[in-house]
Image (cartoon, rainbow, N blue to C red; front, top):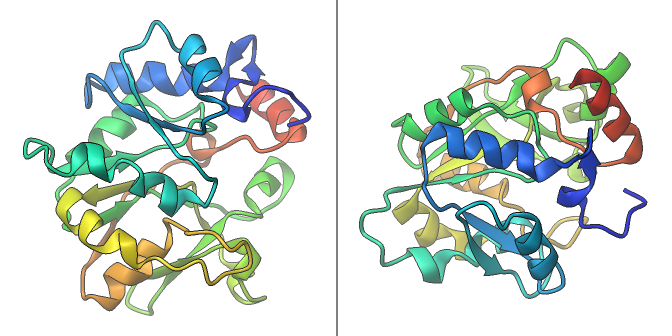
Length: 232
């Protein structure tokens, strides 16, 4: 982002982008005190920026990918029997709305549900989505896996159903299986998206709720920030 700030604190129309998401999480009523996974270096500055919100922080000591980040919350949540499901959101997605969060959290579809977006193409501002992971489905429409762009072949890159990253897990299934993730990929990271293939291989249906492309948009570069400001 060409900024000294953590990406989620980069201003969008004068406000840290994560605050747009936090406002919608609060409005959804899904969780009165959500967890935010931070790095050791970012914990204080993010905590200061979000001091007006009721949140808890979990520190990811090493940046080993999204799967590793989610695994860091296991110790805090594993023994809390009142928590049945876990929704994973990303702080650089400022357009996600409270109604979508509420609907996503409430769905009852087994081990895992994802919230992809289907694009007509990657032209114009939709080029922002080109480097996102692709949703790979079987001929019958069942989701088989998510392939990250770095690991996708030429045919997979033509798929226009892409993954914003939002995922909803049955807590028990998630914590029974997340330790099986591997870093055998181009980035050498533990991808949370590999849980989709794990669910498919374990005969667990992967549910989907599609979301509009504007609402799904994330921000990963100064160019995308400018586009987001225009969309906002």
